[in-house]
Image 1: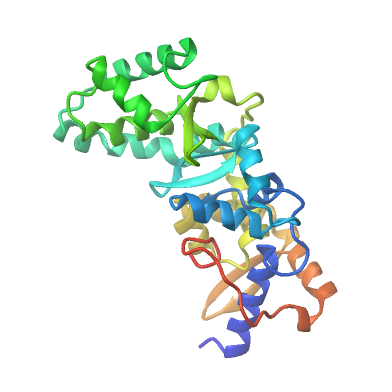
Image 2: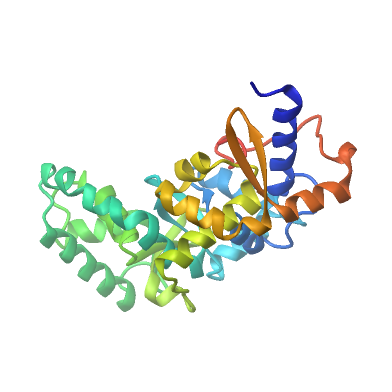
Length: 290
């Protein structure tokens, strides 16, 4: 069985890895990049979670990161909204989210949505955003998009709205980027909004996800990474083996918890007394809580 000291050690190291104690990240973009993905279905909470991990702790800086196309929000994993760097969203969607679309075909057909309906919504959305007929500067709110779809006859059933938006985001056509006057995010075309998208082959992508996760969320087990990313365990194991020289393993309850050596180094520099907080207030869907 695990001991209280082992559990406490893992908790302390996770606080350090997520920069909730000790040295914060310089900017919201740095924080999001290091974290790979951050839970984002609670939009106000996501903004605060990012700010808490930065030097300034400024939500205004987080807003600016979205408005300047450094950060975006989409459905890259586990079927829920996450925040991630704009340059990473394309390859990450292909790695973790595209397979989910195949599994939704039956659900789609049960709602009467055919491939032609998705094609029509995609074509109309590209036309509307690039022509400036709705919104401004190539960006539009959810309500504006749905209203335009209804007006043009591509949304005969209002229950289709979420599914079509989700599909267009997961396939990579749309992304939630800049922030509108009311504080909600606007939809933009990924191809127009993201200036320098990265491309990675599958092996490189898996390796990067695992390394970034263990650097920002560790100590974590292979099962933790699997739950978080939905990547197959065999690929996770190969990635851990490939970067084993950068990791330290902690054996607890017959499970190995891996953490990047840089986290241990920061922890050692801080000293034990700096690793505990009497109070740490976080949004309900913060990565540490999950």
